[in-house]
Length: 232
Image (cartoon, rainbow, N blue to C red; front, side):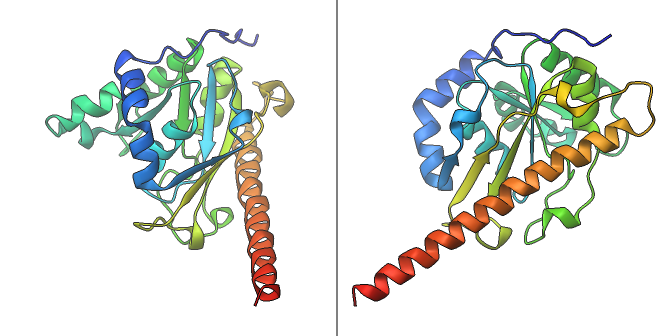
C-alpha cells in the first residue's frame, strides 16, 4: 500500500529563512543565477528534486531557485569534520552521507525528511560532470527509491551554463520543470528493476529540459544577431 504523502510545508529552519531574506540577493548576484520556470515549484513540501550536476555550487543554485520550500541535501561526511563550516551547512539543511558505501542511516534520514513534508535535492549522476552531455553519464537509483518509499512526486530541474561548465562570471540558469506525479510512473513494488526504470524516466526528463532550453537560447542568440545585423 502506498504511503500517504504529507501536504504540510517543508519546515524551513529559522536560520535558512534569515539567510534567504538577507543574503539570497547577494548569492544570486555573485553566482549569476537566473531562475526559469519558477512557477513549476510546488507550494507544498514532500517531494524530491532531481537535477544534473556540473559544479560544486549546484546545491546553492537549487536552494536559491526553490523559494517556497527549503531544499535539503546529502553532503559527503568529510565536510562535517571541518570546524565552523560543518555547523553552517547543517543550519542550511545538509546532512552527512558516507559515499564510500551504502549509508543506511543517511537513506533513512532522507526518506523521513520527504515523508514529513520536506524537500530533498538529489543529483542522480552521483558526481559532477562538467563539459559532459548528461545523457552520456550513468544514473544512480537513490532518488527513485526515496520517492517510492513515500509515494512522493519528483520535480526535474536542469542547471544550464555555456559549454556545460560553471565559470567565475558565467551565468547559470536553473530551469525548473513540471512536477512528475509519482502515480504517473507506474511503480510496481513487486517488479524487479523498478528503481532503475524510474530513475531513467526522471533523468530523461531532466535532460530534455536542458535540451529544450538550449534550443531556446540558440534561437534567441540567432535572433539578436540578425537584429544587430539589420541595425548596422
